[in-house]
Length: 191
Image (cartoon, rainbow, N blue to C red):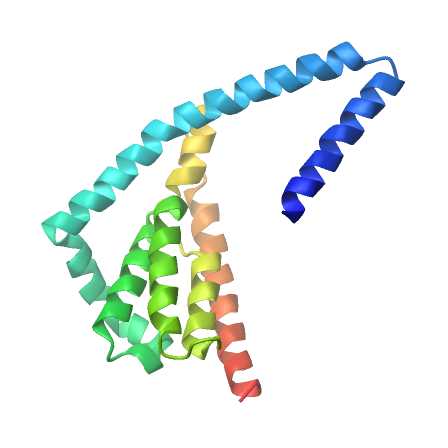
């Protein structure tokens, strides 16, 4: 609701400023050009996102996702010790982490919501340390393959959309390390 209000005010202010300065036709042209560019961007990204969502589905059906889950389980158990014995929660967190590793924020969101729902069943109405850690790790999002960003770069005409990998890896590692450290520290402070 708040974002709708903010965008409405911004658009209204732009139109009023354009009319007041005599640039009404330029504002109208800019709005139409922006809408066309937005549709083009969505269509060009749709193919890449469908590809990676399909890859995730193939990984799930072929058992690769379960293998990745087993591979990640020791680290996940250390991050979420209170849920280490709950297979459903661990599987949901593993799936969320796998989607984030592939840079699929759109796929990671529903998986993260499922993990959060399962975690919240244990302590309804209260965010447990594990749930807070899930929010932190999902938000910081450690990425090996930044598919969404690469698809945006490709749609914008980048010759090599994946040349950002070293910067993404560095930023991801730092943000996740700082987030996990802060979450662990806060969990001890707020006891």
